[in-house]
Length: 265
Image 1: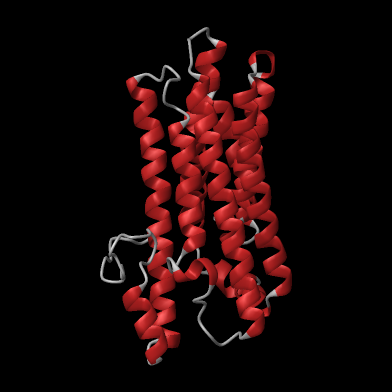
Image 2: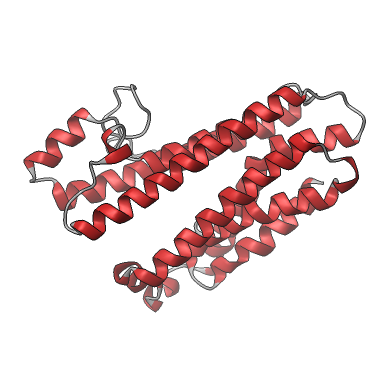
């Protein structure tokens, strides 16, 4: 089952060979959606409504994210300039591209593995708890909504004032609410593995995937902080905002991750 999912993930994330950034954007969103479709096909004869709900959340997440990023590419001139710059493609050796491709494809499989293991175990006759599947799906839905609203609020704020940092709406709570949404989504996926008869090795795989995506989100928050410091660092309003608003996790007094150089992805 894992090998089939890996093949699907490799196939979809191969879009990154066209533009390197696609490994992390379109390959990510549509890759996760494709993995969920693959799971529905693999276990179509033993599906429960809770399993369908979990896969639906993965498809919703992946298609929304992939489509949002695709539309952003078409609408944002600065993003298109970065994307289509042929010099950026030439700077990446083939070995680096292959390594990133494999890393991304494997990570995406690890991320959905709690759902995959639940469905695989149920198909093998292992008794599974439906409650935790529904709890996981509900948490995932909350994360999807959080991410979608964050993206919409940022787009609206940038339309009003492209040169100002965003500190309205959900951005009053944390500086990276879209990344927080991702963390919530994959927390829900991990929770769905509870009560699903996962073996120790299955939990290890699932937890590695969860730690991996959380690491990526904090790395993204660090890159954003560095970029915003370069652009808004001399703005007293931004300095006040950055010192009083947690960067990723609400109520956690972590206001900066720039100094953590190991957060690079």
